[in-house]
Length: 308
Image (cartoon, rainbow, N blue to C red; front, side):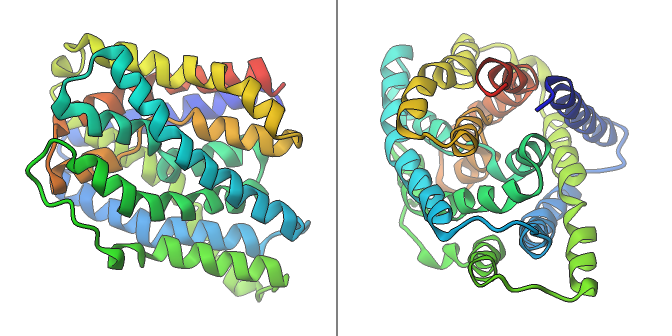
């Protein structure tokens, strides 16, 4: 694992975000187009990338590894809400923002940044393994996530299990079945899913850039708590968590996978859910920006400290 390659990948991703920012500012892309591109990435290109990672697999992991990853994901999403509550107390978060801060701690950016970063660090097989985290993520997002966002808000936080039936979840389960059965596909299908899936990374980064371009950048830097939270989430938390991860997970690959998952910045779902269920969407957008920005430096640092 070459740290220079990882840094280079992070810089490329950040430049793509800058491109999205520029395209918004020169009126080539707008928020309406960005919304449609978001749907395209979530519903089409990311599912294709997940499927392609399985269809192109040359070396299969045993079923024990698969269910171990699922178990790690479940444990992660059970423990991190309590970490979020601890951070709330540490930062003296106002009562109307408690649910949002816990939400942001639990639901990191697996979809837009997690897949390309994992692929850059661990290779193509890790995309499918990351999708296993994604399956648990989506289930928790539309259950626990809805509840957390509704804390202290007047919005509707009733659970709708129909929201769990998404292309991403369906393709993740399909990928799991194909993987466990060692099913291969014709070259035309692998070529199609590969070409479509390869659009995920550039589109995802451009989408985030457009989102940032629509914000008043001055407002991003006016809240001290966001700075402190960013340092805690992106650096201090992974560093403190690693000894426990190393003690509980003996396999170096699974240990690295888990650590990088915990090092991801806040996911864009924080803005989507605050808009739908109530809450401080401005705070969510600021935190997404800050954690994404600093992740360009913290993810390579975490990798260098613990995985090389």
